[in-house]
Structures are given as C-alpha cells and as structure tokens.
Length: 512
Image (cartoon, rainbow, N blue to C red):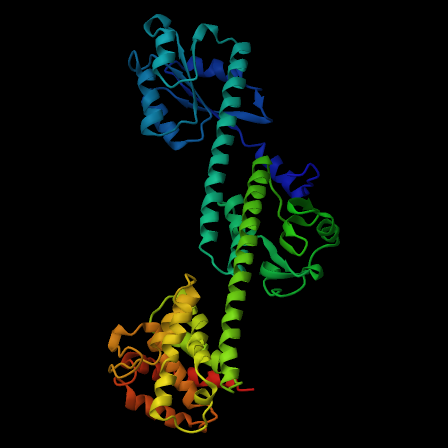
C-alpha cells in the first residue's frame, strides 16, 4: 500500500473506540488476599492505551466456567494448589484441549514451588510462565503483564490475518464461479464487505462503489452498488471525483491503489488501452491489517477481472466469426435476412425449456448459426435453384450436413464442436427417415433436435427465393402433424407452450 494513504476521520473515531476495550485478566486462586493484592498492584496498569478488567474465580472449576463464558480472556493468573495439590495443573490441558482456547496466556503461580518443579512444569504444560508468589512484586508483575499482553495481542493479530486470508480465498472462490464480466465485477464489490466487515452491521458492510473496464480507450461502468447501481454503461469520468482523474492519468502499467478523500480507489492497467478500475465511495480501512487485506484482494480480483475480460473478448470474437461464417452462407444462398439470429434465439428458448443449464443453452445458441455451414460446398446451380430440385440435385443438397460436420468436428473449441453436431444432425428425423445417417429418436443429439425445430419454424414462416412465407397458423399445424414423426414430441410440446414467445422472435429480428 502506498505511503500516501489518507484515512478519514471516521476511521480514527472507530480506532479510538476500540482502544477503550479493556484487557480481561482472570485470577484463579483460593486465597482471597491474592486477588486483592494483585488488583492493587495493577490498579493503574494500561497496555496499548487499554485498561484492565479483572475476573475472579476461587477454584479450578470456577476458572474453567469463567473462561468458557469469557473466551476473550487475555491472561489467566492460575494458582497450582487449590481444591487439590495439582488443581491448577489439571486446569491447563482442559483450557487448551476441551475449551480449545489456545489464545489465552497462562501464568502458573505457586506458594509451594517444591511440589511442582519449574523445569518439569514448563516442559510438560502449555503455559507461558511459572512464578513463585513471593517473587511477584509490583514491578515484576507489571513486567509480566507487558510480556503476556504483548504476546496475546500479536497472536490475535496473526489469527485475524489468518481469518482475513481465509475470507480472501473464500471470496476468490466465489468470484471464480462467475463467468460473465458484469457478474464478476459486481461480485468484487459485494465481496469487499465480506472481507473487511463480516460481522458489521449492514450500514458499514454495504459499501457503494463502481467497477469499470476500459476497452479501446473508453472506460465505462460494468457494475455498481448503492447509488451507482443504475449507472452501468456510463462513462466513469462522469461519476468519479476530480481527485481520481489525475490518478488514472498518471499511473503506469500494473496495480495501483490509493485512498482518496472520497474513498478507496484502485486500478490495474495491463496495456495502454486496457484498464480495470474499482472505486469504493467512503470506504476506509480501520487498521493496517484491513489495509493489507483490501489491497491483496483488490489486486487479485482486478487481475482476475482483466483475465476474464480478455477471455470474454476472445469468446465474443469467436461468436462474431461464427455469425460471419453463417452469414456468408446465407448471402451465397441469396438470403440476407436474420435467419441465423432467429434460429439461435429460438434454439436458446427451447434449450432452456428442455432443462439444459444456462451454459449448455448458451452454447447451443452460439453454435446454431453454423447449422447450414456445409452449404458453402453446394454448387450455386443447386443451392439457388428457384424451383424444386430433381433427385440428383436433392442428393447433392443433402451432402451439406456431412460437409458442415467435416469442416467443424476436428476443432476442440466447444462452440465449433457443438456446431459440428448440429450441422450433422439437424436434418435427421425422429422417425429415422432423415439424413445423412437415418438416426432416430434420442440417437439424434439434443442440440440437433432443438436446432431442427428452430430452423424449420423460421424457414417456413419466412420468405425464400423458392417460396412465400407461411402463416403462423400453418406453421403450427405442420408441427402438430409432425409431432413424433419428423420432430421430437417433447420438444414440439415445449414449442407449443412457448409459441407466443418464439413467435415474437420474428418481430425482434425482422428480415432486412
């Protein structure tokens, strides 16, 4: 974190309130005078600006109950001999093992040192010191308190760092489950609160912020919370304070973070035209540990966000290439409408309705435009013949399914693999009378069965060079007639259930 970090007054007030929380000191001794003398010797003692508060127990069992009730006891001053000659010794493993309290510092005190030799006790018991009661003068008691409380404070700091790291790992895992840039960016904003304030009230935990990404020099909002939730797509320069603009302009490549007067600001610049940005309005870190956690999480999150953005850009390029390939075939067929887009969207609706996951449905939508790719190998005289095809021409036309598969199936890319299967199967029939392989029923891939319905629906309801468009009533009658013959009966039922939604696709993507 930069040395130039500035923290708001709110952080100072929180820290000031925290300093008033007292250190809990538990005295376990059956001699009431020991309790009185210890309190008297430490009556004005403070450590890190925090006073002491004393808890009292007069037996080992009372001591265990007290630690169970107050697990945040910092120091236990424990007598060895109480209800038995080794009651204090027996209490130590119960604190560590039964109560699982490894944080409390334990100092054994004894008035009979011969009964429990120091070397044996230190070696065999998880304690921090072993003292004779006669040697605990006021000065030595103060020294002991400083040593034990400093150790307890540092152990807690290590534990908070460990918990913070766990929260970072958990947040990172949850973020990795998000596959879309906007979801991922919003996830970053949501996880900040979980890392810095998992137990705080909603007012503190729900920070307001924006996540933005720059492509080709345009920095726009991709996710927002609070007052920024409706600003997606807007230019970030219109939303950020003036102090942030100079910061953006001045940074080189890499990760940079800074606390501005208005909140926390960080960015990751991978190149001159690629920048990921995170701004959290009014957010302040309350201590050095939170500053470190915030920076570590944001650095990793923005790096992952950049990688996801690049992957999304690559996938968008693949989708665009798929439509370009499909569109090239459509132009060669002298069809310049939006057949491909409509087939893709209808296929997506049917895929979702059939119970496929979002990922599988999207994959079918993206691959469906490749269903007729093999027509690129069909001669113009056959492809664009205005009238019916003769048997030889029809045989040539039927080869386009195999041609499309042959072009695509060698790729290991999911879109192209799915496209290959769709190209091969979308002219198969449920009754086995289709082509090219005469497959029947569920031997036909689900992607092929879905795209077949989408393709026929749009082809019949659209004008072609060899026919006029059918009415939607005529198309519906055809599907009802061919249910269980040409088409998968279950998919036809889903088509009928969503007929109006699918029919609206034609209005959304009309022919040019």
